Amino acid sequence: SQQGEEDPQALSIQEGENATMNCSYKTSINNLQWYRQNSGRGLVHLILIRSNEREKHSGRLRVTLDTSKKSSSLLITASRAADTASYFCATAHERGGGGNKLTFGTGTQLKVEL
Amino acid sequence: DTGVSQDPRHKITKRGQNVTFRCDPISEHNRLYWYRQTLGQGPEFLTYFQNEAQLEKSRLLSDRFSAERPKGSFSTLEIQRTEQGDSAMYLCASTVTGRTDTQYFGPGTRLTVL
Image (tube, rainbow over all chains, first blue to last red; front, side):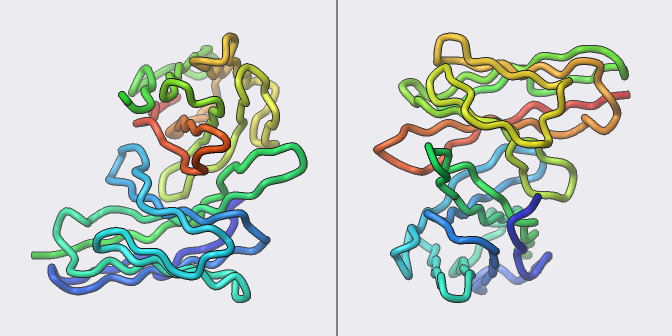
């Protein structure tokens, strides 16, 4: 079952604009990861934020985490056509003897137009 | 670091046939995960291994599915008596405990059951 949802489901912007995607989840986590997936391809890891962190940056990416609201956001600044893809948040849960299996949201389809 | 590889990339089979997929994780990654992704959805966890031990299986993994990782290196996922509902992308990911929680995904095997 899906852990949560990304919002919006689809986003269309012009090149150079910023794109913000939100993710909500339901249960406590160890960390939250964002992935990108181009159509029909595998997942590319973008950034990981741990439950005790509030904000992380990586290049044009900025991720925030609010554990009290069980939500995260991914900001892509100065978007490019090559950023067109589906973006997923995934939460990691450690149970008992281990795991850290990922539970994915439903994804946001980002389209960046020239 | 050659990344996670999966074979085959595409598989078309007839209903009732058996299929087997292979995943080669990143060298020295001791954890290996299998996920399944259907069209328009995020990946869903199927099972994971720590070295050669299969430590958790999702309820999605019916008795027609079996996974192995005999020497703690590559893994295989077999589906017996395939059904049309098995059509999906099967993704493999690996990570190394104690160093990073990031899961690195392979390109996936797309299964089509006719």
